[in-house]
Length: 289
Ligand SMILES: Cc1ncc(COP(=O)(O)O)c(C=O)c1O
Image (cartoon, rainbow, N blue to C red; front, side):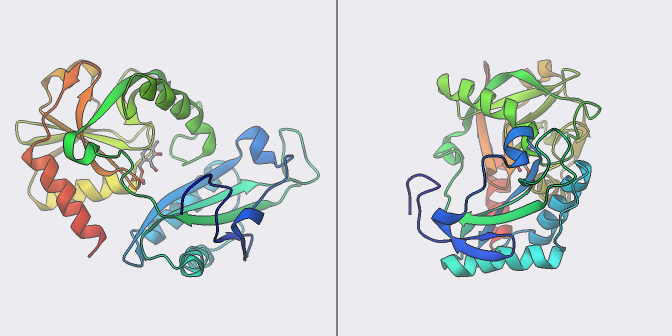
């Protein structure tokens, strides 16, 4: 199945019902279209089991709360909706997208208390997020935009509004032949990529940014646990951009990215080393276990 995402065969779950893929539409006066009032999840199903499914549903509800948006479904209902979609489309291996958003209603200004909060779940077959970067190492640009302060926007939410600068940065990166862009945060520290967290290796230890102005990815947390179980020291700390020069290896983590080696960030280069390959393989085994 390929082609435009709105022109495919299959079923999508919307507000409690499975609807035909091409009928899964919203009105143009949907609040979220105008004011970015939506939160979402990206998940992967491996061999019929969504990796960390409940954690994703919990984060969705938490993201909603961070936007003062109460999602009118329980964890159990969200879990059922996801598996209903996978079953209806006959997929054991797929990417799952859950989105909750403020719909159309009596409010069309910034306030939206009179509008319903709606939810939809779609899934599709999706291979490697960065193409052949898994082997060679992805090339990253350095974004001109900065990840904002948690006092500017709820950075812990996986919310649509936070992705505006991600889309712009990824377009700029792709125009330079890069697969993605690395952001610094509002203070100038190394932050995250447009849809993935970042790790570095130096002298047998791992370094990754504090999750205080980035999305604390579920894959990130999993990989930290995997490294610690191997007895590898993980330094969760503020990382200055100048430090990029001294790091030997680098990889990205994310549900879509999984563990993707990085070969270059701007002018800095990294080797796709043993630890990077080991962690990528261990993660692959874990998600299919
Ligand atoms: C901005 C951003 N950072 C990090 C991640 C990684 O998060 P996770 O591992 O939970 O998919 C994502 C993907 O959801 C993301 O969009």
